[in-house]
Image 1 (cartoon, rainbow, N blue to C red):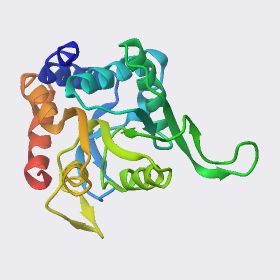
Image 2: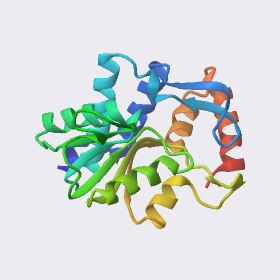
Image 3: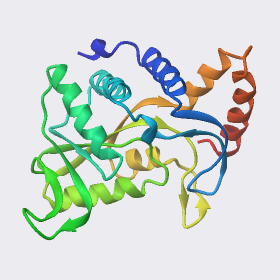
Image 4: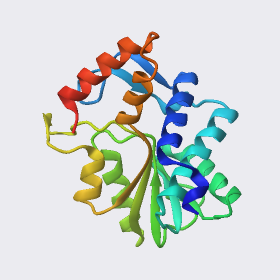
Length: 226
């Protein structure tokens, strides 16, 4: 089954190319949540039509299948995780792996069924689907929700691992958010692509405008990378 997703490196390069072409992965000067000036920005909210979302879900599904990570259901943290969980569940079903999915509301509903959780009951080993992890705050919130429902927060799937130092209380720490989730929380993490894959993509296009972007992204990696 792992072979169905193709080579992880090839999948990652295809994904980076897709994200750049879709205008989701942009280059310039952007301020991150940690207050850093980053030479690139990944905004999954710009996967904003049916074709892009379908292709994105295909990348998630192929990466998950190739990873061999086992899980019983999918959870999408509000708000960006909601369409991700839904479309990834659809794509997994298309690959012959039909699993339930659920998501949360930011505010509890005081009528109808009430509560903050929507969709299938949270149970078994839960896969959290999100776009990127910066400080790991959203991951911790999702984990608390899942545990409170009596289920197991088992793994996470994200589109891009920035491979940079996380911040805690305004200070840089020696690990990334992904390393924290793996090492401290004991969860598996599936990533479609990493910063290293983006650097490879830019380096291979050194003769174009991408060459200058490569230098800036590499300098950023040297300063903040893990």
